[in-house]
Length: 121
Image (tube, rainbow, N blue to C red; front, side, top):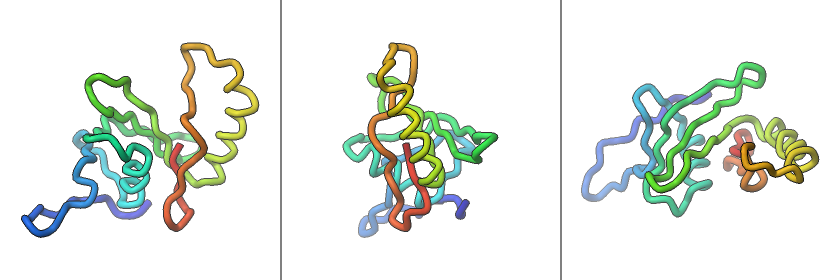
């Protein structure tokens, strides 16, 4: 994982990249991870990362994200695109048609970072 993102001190002339993304104490995200979150929730005024989990088997980063008081929290997974593509295909084949109320639902195929080395689902 690349270095953690530490936003610069804002000035009148320099906009802070991803200033609308905030995290609970201890949550550290790379610039690539922040870019994918911004892409996934582009029209959201404030994105708050409430909690961070590490997936034991795959090493994926799983985040609990709040998009506002009036919306349910969202679970976001960041991992290598090949891992996410396998997960997305399995969801399409085995889970999507079941659609009970008490399971997670994917909101589209994985988003990819500019260098195609990180994905978000």
